[in-house]
Structures are given as C-alpha cells and as structure tokens.
Amino acid sequence: MQTSVTTIERFIFDQEHRYPEATGELSNLLYDIALAAKIIAAAIRRAGLVNILGSANNRNVQGEEQQKLDLIANETIKNCLNHTGRVCVMASEEDEDIIPVPTEYPVGKYAVLYDPLDGSSNIDVNSAVGTIFSIYRRISMEGRGTVSDVLQPGCKQVAAGYVMYGSSTMLVYTTGQGVHGFTLDPTIGEFLLSHPRIVTPRVGKYYSVNESNFWRWDKGMQTAVRGLKGDITDGVKPKNSRYIGSLVADFHRNLIAGGIFLYPADTRNPNGKLRLLYEASPMAFIAEQAEGSATDGLNRILDIMPAALHQRTPLVIGSREDVGFVADTLRIGARSSGATVQPAL
Ligand code: AFP
Image (cartoon, rainbow, N blue to C red; front, side):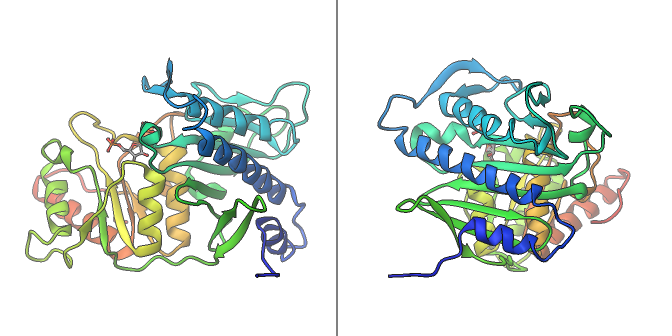
C-alpha cells in the first residue's frame, strides 16, 4: 500500500513556491480546471448508465452536431471558473463569442480558452475523448476581458494542458517548465503525479492521420505521408499507423510513445480542420515543452497570430525529427511548384 503520493495540488503549489513573486492565482486556476475535469470524468463514466449519451439535437458554431456531454462539459468548465476572480474572460470551442465573467463576480488577470470535449463524435462508441485548455495573461488593462485577451499567439500562453478520459483519466499540463502528467485515482478522487517531466522521443514509432483524405491533399503532403510509411526513398524509417480520430487520444499516445500527428489542409478543409486557439496552440505548447515540435506545415504554430476566435489551421505535431521531415518535404514540394516558401520551422 502506497502511503506517500504527490497530488496535483501539492505539485502545482510546490512548483509555484519556486517563484517568490507568484501570487498563487495561476496555481488556483489550474486547480479549478482539475476540479472541472473530475466532474466531467464522472459524467463520462456514468454516460452509458444514465441516458445522457447521444445528440442534444443542436449544432454548435462550426455547424457540427453537439452531443449532450459537450454541453455538460462546456457548462461545467464555465461554472468552475467564472466566479473565482481569477479569470477576466473565457472562450470555448462550443460558443460563438467570448464568454464574459458574469457582472456579479470579480475578474482576474487570466484569459482561458478551452475545447470542453474534443473528439465528441467518438462518445457514442465509448472511445477516448478529452478536454483541452489554454491560459493567457490578459492584455486589456482593466474591467471585463475583451476579445483581444483571447486572440493572442500561442507563444504567449502561460499554461496549457489536456485531460484524457480514457481507460483512466489523465491530466497533462505545462506552465513552460516541462510537461507533467497526473492520473486520476478514482478511489480517492485525486489526480496523482504519474508522469513527471514527459520528454517525447525525437523519432516516433507512429504516424496518425486520416488517410481517407489522401486524394484531397496536395502533392507535397501526399509525398510526406508516403515517406512516413516508407513508400519513398529518403523517407524516414517506416512507421506504424494509429488513428483514433480524437486529437487528445492520438496526441497523448504519440507524446508518450513517440510519433507524429497530422491534420493537413485538404480540398474540403482548405485551412485544415482543427482550431488554432482551442486545439493546435495548446497542443503545440505541450509538444515543444516535451521537446517535440508543431507546425502548420511551414510555420511554427506558436508564432501564428490569430485573427478570429474559431480560426482553423493545418497541424503537423509530434516527435521533432518526424515533424522536421514532413516540413522539409513540404518545403521542397512548394519550391518545385514555384509557390512562395515561408520561413523554415
Ligand atoms: P469531433 O469533436 O467532431 O469528434 O472532432 C474531433 C477532431 O476535432 C479532433 O479531435 C480529431 O483529431 C479530428 O477532429 C478528427 O477528424 P476526422 O474525423 O476528420 O479524422
């Protein structure tokens, strides 16, 4: 029987105490998110038992069908964060506009963006889903936060993380001092440190991409993916394919085991499918902190300046050498087609 464990609360506070100037606000905010994650995890566990599985007969701002659990997760996070005085504004993948802090509550210095339940089309088949979050320091000077507080490039994030509701529930986060993972012990209701300082392998075992889109990609991307599976000379060592269709689950496996995840632009999604602010930027911060990298194919994700809340981006993320191989292949393809080549990764 283990008698000494590191809870997420203790870990966050220990990290904070290394910085005498820290006020504790960020630590408390992370702890609020961990609480929301526990509530959502409990709802997901019960989902097959109580009749809350399935569609809420509603479409979100992207025109996608919303599932009931999406709504529960979205409301849970709002309610855990909106009254604490730590947040000035929020934005959710499920809401069209920014989410103001209700006027009866105080505001704080952080802006929080989140995807409450990513991969939700997997809910009905009991596959892994996740919550992704991203935290920025506000840039507006006072009062309730504004859209400028959430439209910041990923390199300005002060923290980012995800929760994976899988065979166990895990919370993985970074505040720019490495990536740390915690597993929820359901018997005591606490996230316990299980994966301190995660470093992703430089070269991965897996490539993860929805290959049904192959004929919708441009030639450069087709060549890069063929290279990942060893179909071309000068590719990388052939990789195994793994694709769940739930970003958190695909990213998490590759983070731990090494691999590359791609969601490229295609003829149906000319800007890619994934959202810059709720998916790509937080995952890119985590990838880089774990010594991996993330690009839209040509540009570093963390350098992209968002112009709109629900902006989409192509995403190539994971083990550093594999992302480098794809980026190089795309650059060569762009040069030979005469397109303008953007700065290297
Ligand atoms: P849903 O939340 O609609 O299931 O979308 C999940 C997602 O945004 C991301 O988690 C996956 O990586 C990606 O879409 C899967 O997209 P495809 O089904 O087109 O492969």
